[in-house]
Amino acid sequence: GQNIDQPTEMTATEGAIVQINCTYQTSGFNGLFWYQQHAGEAPTFLSYNVLDGLEEKGRFSSFLSRSKGYSYLLLKELQMKDSASYLCAASDSNYQLIWGAGTKLIIKP
Amino acid sequence: ETGVTQTPRHLVMGMTNKKSLKCEQHLGHNAMYWYKQSAKKPLELMFVYSLEERVENNSVPSRFSPECPNSSHLFLHLHTLQPEDSALYLCASSQQADRGFADTQYFGPGTRLTVL
Image (cartoon, rainbow over all chains, first blue to last red; front, side, top):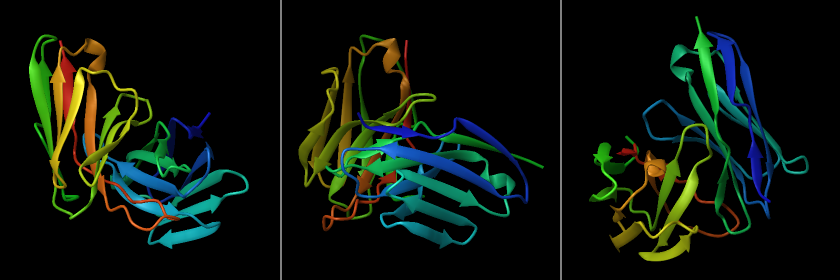
């Protein structure tokens, strides 16, 4: 079957760095997405990786290893506004997104 | 503001009611989606429309009925729902482009549905 695993909840300190991991098993693979979702709001697109390696966008970076079925989202210089859920989703052979349950990130002062 | 709007934002209905959710996208996209989001569960894809034709129906109960009159509007008609249907219903849109790359989906803020 198709499956996405990511931690349920993580806690980090303001100004620090946090890495949110995601492992996936899909029938075929057409890329890996990360979305951010604040409570009561729409999920918003953060990143898309289809090739192995690291993509950097300001304070956020995303990494993909296709051979390992593994990705991570790295958040640097954490701010209180980064408190949110982070959703990992893999695109399968039919370009359908298979979603993880999300990682709730709590930032403490 | 993602360019996808949904109304209403909150809805409370009884099991015998009929109501409709509305989604509108202002991004010029050619595909639209309905998702169900329940607490601590992955997003569940319900329906996909591409070029106004339904291309995906993930075994959704018939008490949910989608309608896509044009590429900018999507409706979800609800009737005789059950309490377990209470959830956040999210609409999304994307531009289906060349294959080899997945399409980025842009989401609306959702409708929080409570079925009594």
